[in-house]
Structure formats: structure tokens, C-alpha cells
Amino acid sequence: MKVKFLGAAGTVTGSKYLFTFRSGKKVIIDFGMFQGPHELEMKNYEKLGVDFADVDAIILTHAHLDHVGLLPILARKGFDGKIIATSATYHIANIVLLDAAHLQHEEIETENKRRQRRGEPELKPLYDVSDAALITRRFLYPVAYNETLELFDDFKVTFRDAGHILGSAFLEIEAENKKIVFSGDLGNYNKPVIRDPQPIHMKDADFVFLESTYGNRNHKSIEESKRELLDAIKDTYERGGNALIPSFAIERAQDILYYLREFYEKGQLPPVKVFLDSPMAIEVTHIFKLHKECYDEEAKALIEKGKDLFSFPGLKATRSVQASKEINYIKHGAVIIAGSGMCTGGRIKHHLKHNLWREESSVIFVGYQAKGTLGRKIIDGEKVVKIYGEDVVVKAKIYTIGGFSAHADRRELLSWVRDVRKGATIFHVHGEEEALVAMKDAVDSMGYKGYIPEYREEIEI
Image (cartoon, rainbow, N blue to C red; front, side, top):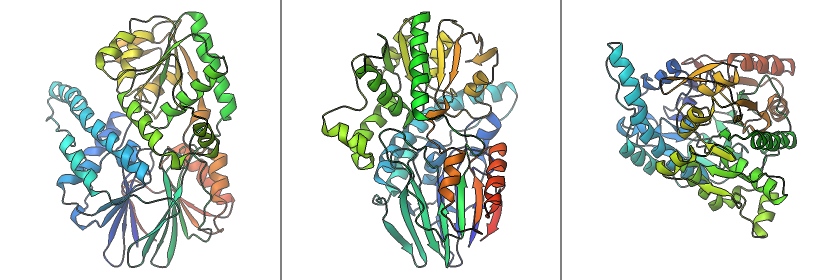
């Protein structure tokens, strides 16, 4: 069989991998969007050189945009195969893809203004709402964890719980007498609500595709990170400002709500008003409540006691644009959870425009910030950043809390892959160069054969 690395090779986003078998069958694992700096996002417009009418199936590890975000382009490219995922992934992907279709029009408008000024041809949106709705009809019946699916002769795939976000899976594949473990995005351990990643069952695997987002660093503990979050909110309240929390709508927003509820119930939260200012996060929170089969034992026990894991007095969910704008009149005592998580778009940019220049306010980063994003620029200490074309001075207090990541850290990745037999080949994907190299060095020293593939490289395995 051959595998072609069509994304997340040498970078974190754009996950997509094409497998071609001797039988002529073709399977793609994930079909994600590139995110980050402008030149990286332009890769979303590149032709992949794949006849999608010949692709038999697409298997999804989870519903983050960088793993599913380009699926709607297939609606008009002849793809009539199956899309296979867990039930929770299916439900979240529906929301993610429709939201991305709406954002396409806003982002392309801004991009085309730039292109006009440079005398360049205009771009069309990658896809529209009808494309997003059409492609979701290609989803096969949902697959359960630990269920083995035989897609065709000599190809079996088993979905295991990756513990990354609701419904996320890593894949164990048997094909052409080879055994392959595909990590997808592996989760951070000891997070609330969902279970920890399952161990690898296929210990005799020949090949492992290992995400390496945090291949060069370890996270702080969840408990330490919770204390930092509470201290940051208290400090901001005492200084008379607002606390902004840029947050991914899937998993991170729900985790933060879970912790804030805990703080409130323990009497630790100051008298703040908490705003979940993200229609998408609101919708995803409802989906969380539908999929209790993904919960860990602690979350299930709380549910049995009648608790709402994601709600508490003082929380307001703001759906409308007008309700979001009204938050900007609040100068003190607001905790604002909004997307996008890397500050590349969404309502958080408006809140940054109104608060980033205020010394009494704070920005609390609780997730990964890719190179080139507004969030990364703020974290890296830039004194002035551009928001909607306007220079905004950075005077707010900046907090970076790493322990809330949905990704496994270096220590957890190495512990997880250690179950595989020595001598197996490890493909290091889904990471920036420093993390990929660090992870390769580590697994090489453990007796594996590490390899860092390049974008669009094709390898026979």
C-alpha cells in the first residue's frame, strides 16, 4: 500500500492522508483545513491531484476543523463514498462545517479586498452552506468505540477512544498483512467529562502515525492549571477589568465552563458575570449533553446527582450579534469566553479590540496558538497588533495556561506509544518542526524507526 501525506506534515493543521491499496481501493483518513498564517491557509485552495470519484471511504478521527474542514469541497468533486465516524463526531461535524461555510463568505470578502489592492484575481469561497449540508449525507451509520468495521476485503478498522474531544478516536487498521495505528489527535489525561485515551491494543503494529503537537514539552497538571485560571480571574476582578478567554468551541469551552461551575459551587468565584459568547460553543455544549456514553465515571456520577455540568448562576449564553455587542459596554467584572481559540476570527477579536489596550483587563490563553496567528503574536510579546486593520496596543495582562490542552504532552505521547513493539516505524505528523524533531529523537532512542514525512510526500509501506 501507499500513503500520501496531504496535510499535517511538517505543520500542525490540515490533516489528511491518502491510502492506496494494491486492490485499487482508496481510503482517506481525515480531510482537514489548514489554519494559521495566510500562506498556510492558501494551501486550502491547492489542487490535490486526487480523483475523488475513485475514493471509496473517508474515515474521520474527530470533528475539529483541521481534521474535517475541507469535506464540503468533495460535494462537487465526484466523491460518492462513505464517511465513517463516531456518532458524536458526526453531530459535531455538522455544526463545524455549516459554521465554516458561513465564515467562508466573511473571510473571502476581506481577502478579496487585499487581492484587489494588489491587482490579483479574486478568490471564490471554498464551499457554501449547500455543499456542507450535502456532504454530511455521505456519513455512514455511526461507529462505536471498540467496534471493528470491515470496509472491504483485506481492510479492517477498529475505533478506540482517543480522549481528545467528544467522540474522538484513534484507529487500528489491518490491511495487506500490515498493522497500522493512526493516533489522530491523542488527548491530554485527567481532563474533565470525557475519558482518558485508551491504550493501544494492537501492540504488534508495524506502523504508527503519531501526532506530535506537544512533542517537545510537557503540560502543567490540571489542578495547577485550574488554580492559575482562578487566580487570573480573581486578579482581573480586583484590578477592575474584564477577563477574556479565547477558546475553541469544541471541548475547551465546555472544560472551562465545567471548572467555573466547580469554582462557583466551592464559593471561590468572585461576583463576575460569565458570558459564553459563541453560538457554536453553545450548540456543541448541547451535543455534549446528548452523548453521555463518552463521559468518564466522575462525570456520570455528577449527572446521576442531577447536576448540569456546564451551567451555574451568573452564566449567560449570548447567541445574537446584538447581545455580543452589548458585552462591550461592561468595563469590569466580565469573564468572556469566545472564539476563535487562536484569535484568527470570531467574536473574540471584537472583545480584544475593546479590552486589549486596557491595563486593568486580562487575556487568558487556555489553548494552543499556532505560528502566525493573532493569539501567538500576543503570547510572543508583540506590543502592538492589528485587529480589523487597526493598530491596538497590548497593555492587558497576558496569561498562558498550558495544562488545559486537549492534546497529550511529550511524556504522555511517549508513554502511549511505548506499548508498540520495538522496531516499528513511527511517522511523526501534526506538529511544528521543533516538536517533530524532538519526538523523533525520543522514539529513536527507544528502539523505534522515526520518520518525519514532508507535505505531499508519498511512501510505500
